[in-house]
Image (cartoon, rainbow, N blue to C red; front, side, top):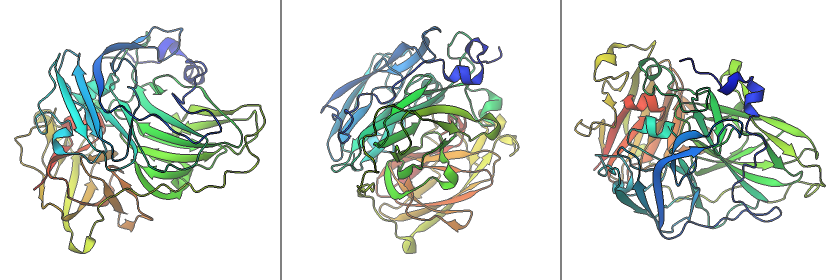
Length: 471
């Protein structure tokens, strides 16, 4: 069956199909610093089938898999350094787990079935408990049959709040998800196609923000907004351009950075990557400004639009307050004593298809392919000495982009194709372009077996995955 947008809508009509939508969620009133209620000491989170109205009331609700009955799942908030406890109940008809993406936590809480915990069987529960050391924008998603489970909707934001957040008037959260829907607005079947696995992955025809096809975001002239963006898509890379505005990036993957404008005017986020922005609404009341995703130049589209209310500005001049976030307690790499390793990303269409016959593998790292949920009996890609600095050289020999994610650690991005990266750019997921080499450094201070994999889900389950073991 050919995949089309519901009811063959034109692109602009389709993006507006959801009607007006406030994308802020439960947020403070205007004129006050952004605050939020932290998660309770213990919470319950249920993964189960649900229905979601994603493309407007004129279309049927979409059958999804959801946390807490909503897509995306509930926004979980916890204070930095406070104990977090979640009892996850599985009401799906297959195994699942929850991975707390980007959190430096104990290995037993990392959510990888067979490697760090037994899978959560249908009808069973598992308790996750950890104390997040870092403030920032993180998220949670399954790590068991992750292509299908995440592709059907299982994802949510986890916000770890700073003790002293920056002064802003409001906080917004955009969780971006990409769906392949049929004409009747249902999730199309056909996960795990061989050609998609060897190319860019399962790209959809419908992009939602906070679970709905978005429209205008109401803003007020003169206000300052903190915008948290989570790319929870299974394969879609976004490059966001904020027309008429100059956002400042203040954190990447939850880790504070030197405030700067996006390189080339576009905020580039691969699947699993996040960014915190500070936006001063400096245009006139009544104006409207598109936020364009232009990663695919010929398929650029309006993701959302900032629509200024017609009332008087909140203030005449930009807020005079620092936008810099307090640093997190990350261990600093010692490059002089670092052990260095090269990991070569191989395979895919136009990159050698010889691995397709090996247990369904389309990709490999240094010639090794870990497929499906991961073969925990395979030897690790690397065994690292604890508390030692490690420099990884990720060399992409393929024709495709790969957002490479390391569990349990944050790394410092050092170089791209031999050119030093300006400033301190930390992350847990780095986007490696075709034929590019990226160097990252981290202190292997978190003991256990940690996954390293591409976060294009088709790539992960078809070979582009391995384990780093920290002694």
